[in-house]
Image (cartoon, rainbow, N blue to C red):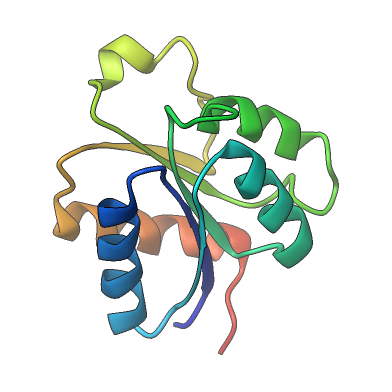
Length: 127
């Protein structure tokens, strides 16, 4: 399955690594470097999936998620949150919804791929 995936991370090395991993899987990938660009690109492109760091300049990924939920164009997009912080530290700010997941850095690509496969049917995908 081919999907359009929006990756948002202020670490250019990690964003590039995710870009390479996802394009090797034949996905179309957009990249945002901060929370503001994430919100803008999500509304403009309406990707099938968003993979976002939680702590970024401008706006945290979790804050942008709340904004996206208010827009009918982006409210149904599944989101995979990533962070160097453990889940226990972040669970108060992360949404607990079927269309969201969390994975801790450093990323285990087998686990990342499994979560992407779980989330893509929730947001649709392009043949």
